[in-house]
Length: 269
Length: 282
Image 1 (cartoon, chains in turn cyan, red):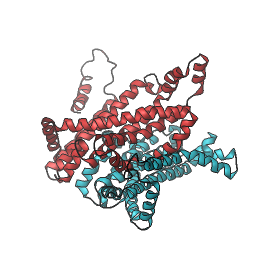
Image 2 (cartoon, rainbow over the protein chains, first blue to last red; image 1 turned 90 degrees about the horizontal axis):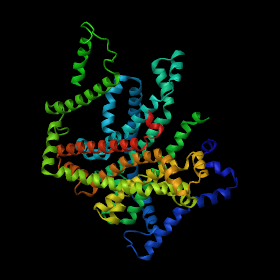
Image 3 (cartoon, one colour; image 1 turned 180 degrees about the vertical axis):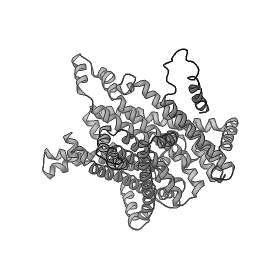
Image 4 (spheres, rainbow over the protein chains, first blue to last red; image 1 turned 45 degrees about the vertical axis):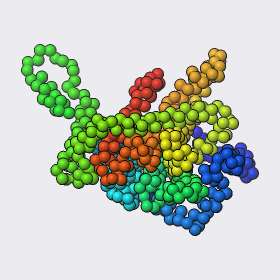
């Protein structure tokens, strides 16, 4: 358990010097370097066309062009704000619905069948539906992301709230807490690990749905940018934009993991 | 649901005449009531959909009546397009999923067993796992064209990471006592793998597969929407482009059924494979 507490930094304690940490990092990420070298060699050897595997230098140049001169940042902001709006609404509604489902039987009986039917549905299938409902603008993508992220949050919250130790509920009630107090102070906190897990799944879904809805129906955003660069044959820029989006998704997940570790600090202590 | 409503007065009526023999059977278990109410909720929603659309409370273009949608599916079923589309979608999703699993499980096991494999794959998996893999779709289109190859490879790529991560986590956190006792009884490495490692990691591997399968389905639908051609996703996006809302909802109903069947089947497989495991004893 102690190495979990210390996180990644635990390894540093073996050799506290900075150089040790640097060597460690280089060794750890050397496979990525190997992959990059393989990419370059495959491109230079002429086995595959330069179109299909642009050089890393070219990709980087295209990236900095887009970043400083182009509209990469604008499109990213458009996409991320849509994802954030949909995800935020899904988290708020999902936690409330999950808590109510766990606490009140009528609500559970009402919502559970809907969850059971729609949970296994691949949410990307809703893209044409939101297109018919709300057209090609922002609102259709926000609705799609909201619907896609809602169920993981609901299910996570529900499972977490159902799993809260009943002794805690009884003692809170016997100390005079009202039903709402118990819900807010005991159930919500007790369910927090599962809620955070559900939200992590939802975060991943929000990126998948953001990019794929922009591939299919959009007039701006990173997904639209990637597909129009691909259609225009500007492959180095397309690769750069793809790696950039993938990097944002990765960074968002890392940030989220940090945040949830901070939120759950009381639990491990 | 109607049966349950009828059953209540009957159960009460059975008590009123002179009792010949006291029967210990319980009237209706609360579980049955739960199921009945939930079936009623689904029926009520379907009714709301049908009649709301039919009598003008909902715009029939935005939500065509359920009967019209089911009628369209029936027509297409007779015309033969539904089986082809569903079959193609299922084929792509399951083939990609199988490839991702067949590569992912051995890689995960090797990562847990060999330091060299772990060194190579650990950064790739820990970076690749949280990335939105669907963004790589244009690269696969560029490399493998727009037909089945690129769709299946894309699905396999998106299924690979959850499987590897779960298998690695499952195999590297094994309880050491069973391994040591198997060794002390003279088990060889191969026997250890099949008799100890795999069964013990099986719950986590299956959890990984249960994450990968819906991801694969999402990816299949998106690839079909983007590249066109046959398949439920392609049919839906065509319907959407031509403002054929009945066609879109026919696709949605098919996909809901397909997703439900596929996900539930994997749950049944899990219960069968883990019949020996304490988790099935609940």
